[in-house]
Image (cartoon, rainbow, N blue to C red; front, side, top):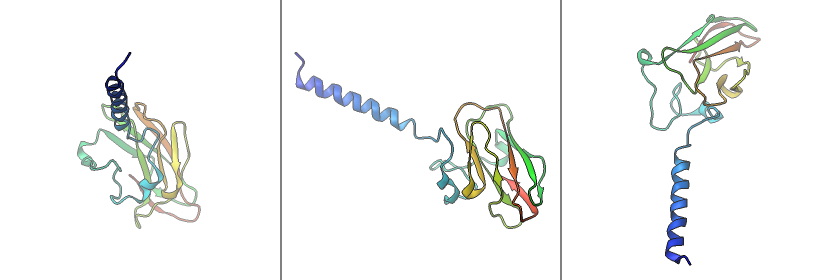
Length: 148
């Protein structure tokens, strides 16, 4: 026969282990949430107190096939790791003149779009060496775009 104290200790141990497991899974394994668009730190990941790295120390590079757009223009954008893999991303298109969100992204395998702020994000947190996307310019505008 087991003592009530032993049962109580076992229940507490299970609860403690469950809470420890839950605290380690607080990331965004299936992409950034839509409220990332309206966070207080513009153009920075929404990972609590963590801040973006300086441009010079980034372990990846973002390249685009162009930066000028006209009605319906498509621009290919690639994220490529220098030496390391990456797991997540939040990529956004902005008008260079007004800094407003513009255009839309084609959804590709393992990505999801956030149309509310012209963004695309990862749909899984597997290691990636490279990811390529296609951005579609608005049908009624032209100008310069940058990707962040």
